[in-house]
Image (cartoon, rainbow, N blue to C red):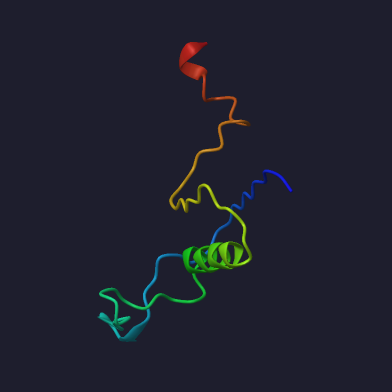
Length: 82
C-alpha cells in the first residue's frame, strides 16, 4: 500500500464522437454525445472508473492532447544563447 503514478504517452485517435452519418452525432441521453470507444480519452476514463471501482484513491487524472516538443535532445534549442 502506498503512492503510485502511471504515465502513458502515445499517438492515435482521441476525442471523436460516434456518427450515424456525416455530421450527425448520436445523443447519449445525458446532454452530450456518444464517444468512440476506441479513442484514447474514452479508454483512459474507463480505466479510471475501474481503478475507483476497486477502491483505489485517484487524486489527479489528466488527458493532454496536441503536439509536444522534446527539447531534451535538441542541441539547437539554446542556439540563440550561444
